[in-house]
Amino acid sequence: MSSHQVRLEVRLPEGHWSGDVTRANPSAILRIEKHMPLSRGRGTARISCSEDISKSIGQHPGIEDFKVMQNNYYDVTIEAGGGGFLKPLVDVGVIPHTPFEVRDGWVDWTIECSQSEVRELINSFKQQSIPHRLVSTRSVTTRLLTPRQRQVFDIAIREGYYDIPRRISLTELADLLGVAKSTLSVQLQRVESTIVHTFSEEIRRRSP
Image 1 (cartoon, rainbow, N blue to C red):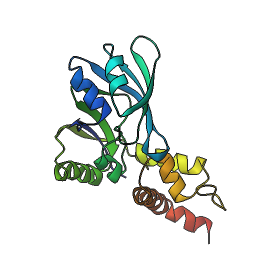
Image 2 (image 1 turned 120 degrees about the vertical axis):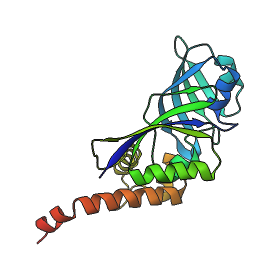
Image 3 (image 1 turned 90 degrees about the vertical axis):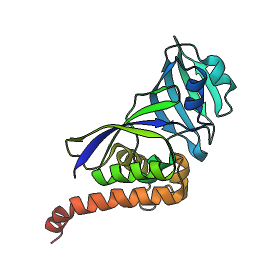
């Protein structure tokens, strides 16, 4: 599979916690070290910042809780709707590399995906009138699954979605990943289709 590494700058909408916090502190550089989904659309993030943003974080309605770790490092629990990855990324099924930075409401994302997913992503940003800038795009060494697909696949395996009998339903897995059931269904179909088509000849050879 051909793969591209795309760098995008995207304007985060009002209400998105990291967009709002950096707009309130325009000289701050917020660095998302890691980001993980929780159930019911919530999430966690570990962040660092070039200045103290405790007050802005503490006052934001999209933040459920936070801890100051050390030297402007924070562990943040994000409310449902407080701001995760934007809908175009979730719909296409891609996830930005971490760490990434947010400055004055603009996030700088690097994403690895197929050429068709690049087009789909850009079109989705345009259709939803989300300000964005395509900074660069380049071909990279091919890989079977995108980082987001690999994350979904790993969690599905870990939670027993492919066990017989299943240990987790599609609905429960979607809640765990913080995405809609229909979105997850499409993501899993893409993963399964990629795997089946890639290994179809080997399956035939080993199943005469």
